[in-house]
View 1 (cartoon, helix red, strand yellow):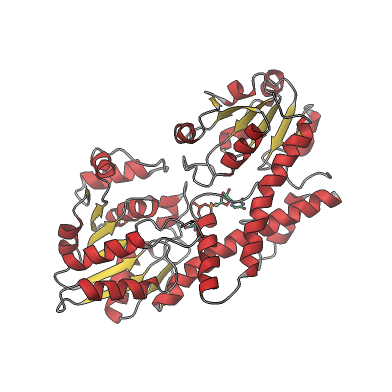
View 2 (tube, rainbow, N blue to C red):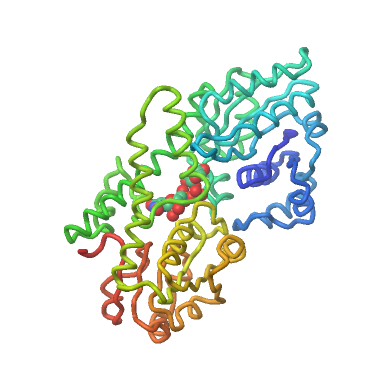
Length: 433
Ligand code: UDX
């Protein structure tokens, strides 16, 4: 059992802290947002993540998990400190590391004995070195410490499972002592641990996210070719995916990737490369394809409806992907704004994200169910593949719609069945345009 401090209670910080507590450690989560900490103390979750609330409750009850705004005191009492604060994008795509720097200074000032400081946030390669220098400048000279990098690969919507059963744990260290502490912490998970230098660990995170984003843009580009030739992208992805060297995952064509990781991390990696005098053209193309995918989808809706002005369009799904209420960089925002610009009236439904979306997009009629969305709409547009949309009573939907038109940005239905049911069904990469 280790005494652990987690700085930052965003997605990564909160899930990491909770799961490390569940593994038996004594964890204190720190955030300078008092409102958030007060809510967490009352066991109210700032995000919707399946299973998180129960796990927080369980570990708070067992006295292994607590929340505070007092960083200095917590650092003093902790052997291991994970930095999991935000690294939001600046205007030019570069990651803003001012929170990381502030936290490193504060940590330095609270250090008393040996501490291991671990970067968990996604940060540009070489940040570990800067964190180390910052701590050195502010720490009492006699205090020993190590810095390590331990990137997190969890996905929203399946974050706890991803943390508890990861494919691998990546640890970037400079000393045996740091390596031993981190391998001990992760030992109960019984998964492969790869130990590297700090820079390599930081790069594993950039490279993994960029590679996954590349897979998505690749299949989206293939979906365009499928539409031009009459091929079926689902079959193409299946055939490609059966090759073990390629793999089937992250080959789902759709309206592009969103969320707070891929778009932000990709932009940051392009900037990092630029600063290192390398023009990462491949990743620029990945970004471009992702943007175009949303534009092509808007064109599909426009083509199907002829005139958009005055038409009512029903949107199913607002979060950037299922099982989360996160709407950051969600394709739904660009799609709704694009349709509204052309004069469409928008009705929308999402199982969890309507609260958050209603603060961002006010000029939308938020409905209680997919059926309410379909009622008298000129078209139904699937934006997020929530499983409840896969089980809709489509005969009922057809009766409710003014026009039996479904435009599906996630390919959740069988084209043939939809046609048999009498829908005009437009999807991605599965019909000739
Ligand atoms: C991602 C990484 O997967 C995770 O390892 C990292 O820690 C954070 O970023 P996340 O953003 O939560 O996780 O979701 P993910 O499931 O990876 O999906 C990202 C986006 O890609 C979503 O918008 C999703 O709809 C899209 N996507 C994913 C596709 O369009 N097609 C696919 O085949 C897979």
